[in-house]
Amino acid sequence: MKICRFNGGRLGVVDAGLVYDVTRVLERLPPQRYPLPQKDLLIEALPQLREPMRQAMKGAQCHAVGTVVFDSPVANPGKIIGAPINYADHLAESKADAGIAHGRKITSIGDWGLFLKAGSALIGCGQDIVLRFPDRRNDHEVELGVVIGSVCRQVRRKDAMAHVAAYAVALDMTVRGTEFQSFRKSIDTYAVLGPWLVTADEIADPDQLDLWLRVNGQPRQQSNTRHLVYDVARLIEYASSFYTLQPGDVIMTGTPQGVGPVLPGDRIEAGVQDVGEFEIRVAPAYAGESAAA
Ligand code: MN
Image (cartoon, rainbow, N blue to C red):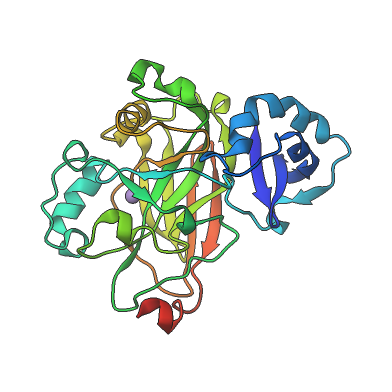
């Protein structure tokens, strides 16, 4: 099942090029009181909501996929987890390109660990990426996004995949520099998730998926998740050895070779096999002077 959020908070099911508006299913979510939980209620309830969503498609208002504005398909992830240097070929380019490494010694994901991206950085593909710091390199990174469906902590890799709710295409945008990843990769709009979620039952093997990225029609990245250093199950095992993972937590699994800069006005197309593809615009101007000061 392909599930999206669109047009400023509406819920949709995507089928055969159409978005079915099933927003009324959200009324089934439990009422919340302060303090709100650090998880995504829709993702947590997904197993129970699939049949009601299917029912709600009957007679639902429909839109062509190309006519809606996609929001992030996860509204409230408690955490967005990033995986650094997790493809061998990206590891090699990071060692070879001083513009990526900035003097850091590039070692391994087992040495560096994971990083967190701020929730305030998250957008859907219907919004613009707004670049900051015109004097620095702002790079694209296409990645497979994994959405956690149920609570897990210290999970073994053999049990890890049972905790995956869905997949999406992710962009881990980054400004290159000397600061830690969590700082550089958490700028507003530097975490893109889209266009929709594909539920885990539709992906036979997440470690065998092509992924690609083009800028203004020019190929930049092209690889397959079989080249991940830590595969999806290992990433869940690794992350959950430090953090309790909650429904709606997102793991951006790492990027292959071919990262490179984007500039205002660029058009990025990014996709993952069997998951989807989106086009997103880089805003025509950098964020305001006050933000860059
Ligand atoms: Mn990345």
